Image 1: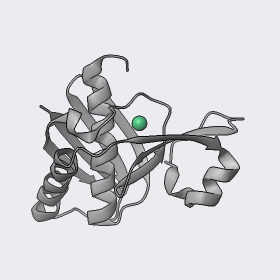
Image 2: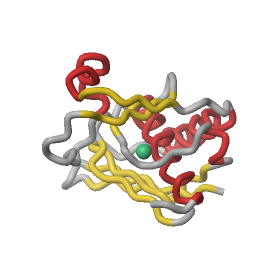
Image 3: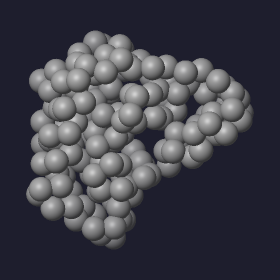
Length: 150
Ligand SMILES: [Zn+2]
């Protein structure tokens, strides 16, 4: 996770995640990946989304990119962060044990998450995302969304 391309792809995950949370109301992320221009996210969800919902996730993500929002990085104690934002900053994959200070990545008005990876400074650097495919796995109650950035 060090190339400029993967920094953009990783940052796009935060944007797509914000869209999934807002449009579907799915809260918990179970896994993410970024490889070159390709990225993906899996969230806990209980049904197959409609094509309209998937289109809306792509459309609103691209609106946030176009707005070129400045991305904020906060660094504060785990206790303070939980007091301020609650459990919305967390994912289902665990943090390293014994961590007392968290790095929080905030796309104001859109997404907030604990994350110690590198991010672009503004959302506009991602340029555009295109959802490649979505797959709902009923047995695992998991929605997987994969995308490419341009
Ligand atoms: Zn991140």
